Image 1 (cartoon, rainbow, N blue to C red):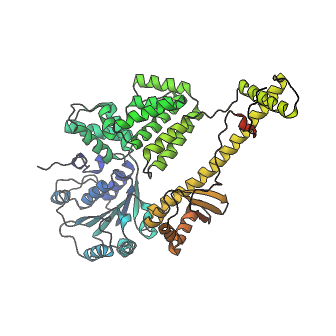
Image 2 (tube, one colour):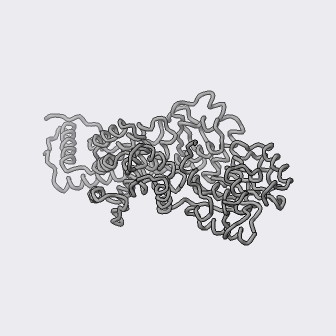
Image 3 (cartoon, rainbow, N blue to C red):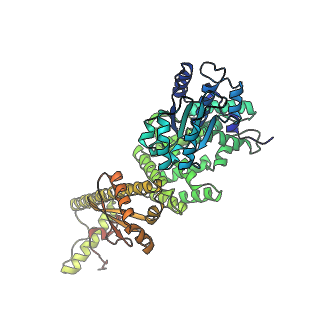
Amino acid sequence: MAYTALYRNFRPNCFSDVVGQDHITKTLKNQVISDRVGHAYLFTGGRGTGKTTSAKILARAVNCLNPKDGEPCNECEICKEILDGSLPDVVEMDAASNNGVEDIRSIREEVNFLPTKAKYRVYIIDEVHMLSTGAANALLKTLEEPPEHVKFILATTEPQKLPATILSRCQRFDFKKISEDNIVKRLKVICDESKINVDPAALKTIAILSEGHMRDAISILERCSQEGSENITIEIVKDLVGIPQITYISGITKNIIEYDTVGALDTIDKVLNEGKEVYNFLWELIKYVKDILVYKSTGKADLYSESEVKEIKSLADLVEKDRLLEIIYELSDLEGQIKFSAQKTIMFQTCIIKLCRKNSFKVPDEAIQSILNRLAALEAKVSGVKIQKEEPKEQLEDTKKKFEESLKVDLSQKKTVKEEISRVQAQWDKVRELLKNSKKVRLFTALANTKAFEENDLVWRIEFLRGLTDFNRTILEEQDNKDILKKALIQVVGKEIHLKFDKNISKDKPKEEKPTRSIKDLGVDINEIDE
């Protein structure tokens, strides 16, 4: 007998088995009981949350010969034929591969015929947002006023892509992400029936990794069960999905907190040499720093063992909340940028080095005294007047205070410029993401490896880090592409923006000047003169 995946073997056969969607299943059951089932439904939500499963259950429930409290019996002739896919009156169609006008026209012709066996002819159209514009328009009339013996159930992960005319013709049900507790309960049932031995901590980890998607959780469990181990542990789960060991995550977090660049890079090398994915490493690092922040704020770290909690406590004692927030923001920004980069490792290492730099530029007394002595020596040589090397204490303190205040001003200005550049670049990234999601591949590709800088409120300068090729220039000069880019900018920024395209990185781009503990910070170049 052919092997069947776990998520198919344990697909719910009645509404009561659907996990985490009680707000939907209760309504559907009541409609079946009162015989007030609508003619068109729209099921929306993330992958693996029960949309298609609920659609199949509803198709059986409205046609079942012996329904019980709004549930299909799954034992009558109609239910069995629907379950094995042999009943022609229930049609399941994938709009991703059947998205043409002709596919919808065939449905329009079929709906005029009465069902062969069942009470209703039910059409389940999955990923309905993939229908072409023509196909969606062809569906409208039938969807609005279908024959009494026809029911439509549409399912999609992206309802915002559907025309408003389709949305208004359907009863909409939003499937939410499934809670971790509900996922763990369902996985326990599957493990008991499949005789899979698994640690509770491993189930909790699988539930976290699934991010609210039941099918993903079952798929991870199935892969772990095929490792050949008698018992599934948290280490097996993490190793399977490419998550580094907690010791590595804790180690690099400590390196960042203590500004230990060498130690952080050594840890990265060890993790990558074990074949772990950079993206998984980054995801786990963000989560761990977040858990430290939560522990520092609430004293809770429920997912960790006693020894791990001790390590989290020791790290929490070493760092302030603002510093943890800064780390999370930097790593989260990197997570968004690294998806589209071909140099993930380099970007990750660069970000870690940046986080390991100290932001404090306080100048010690010895440095101030050294600067004053060298200035005094220079003035003496220039004027021919011999002066004392040691300055009065009051002058030292006053000079030190002015110097540190000037550094604060520089850092404040630097922060303002950095925030402004970051804001414009974030909006530019959203524009390119919008082009990508809209299938404007040529235009999106032409704008790859670009950075945006604001010249004024209405003009942005776009720089091509690898140069502006003639091919890309031709794409950008097409009027249709200009109009598309203009609309995308208005949608993201909220106003019309004029773009200037630079071939290479501009020399006048705002640069982050790093304060250093040197005499050069005073604005003059001085060579020390021996008396």
